[in-house]
Image 1 (cartoon, helix red, strand yellow):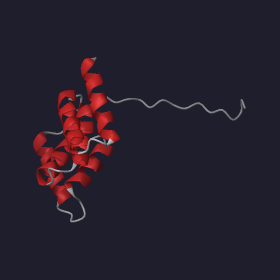
Image 2: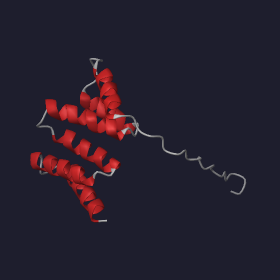
Image 3: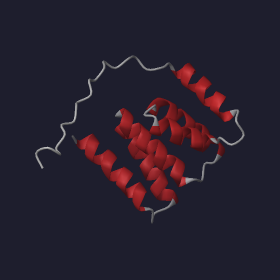
Image 4: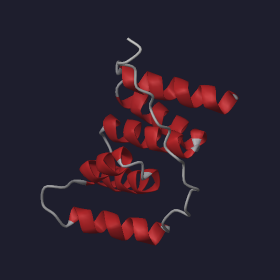
Length: 120
């Protein structure tokens, strides 16, 4: 076992660069939406996965303005708000998702997570 064990190197963390401006995020979102296969929800999912949470919130907001009855959009935006530390907004979106679909477990998770973070 001793010969097979490898040590993992720690990655050096870089100082956080200032984030893009809101107008840059909107422009990037519009650019992605010019492709026919990309919906605002798809753009939001891609931006969330890339850890561009401001752009994800912007894309999910665009999707919500077009489709107000989809609880998934509110839940996804809640997750993005949580990642940004905006737990009040995350809580509101989680409550909206729950009002639309009271049997959806992920919405309860988002609600509980936002409530716990707000109480800390």
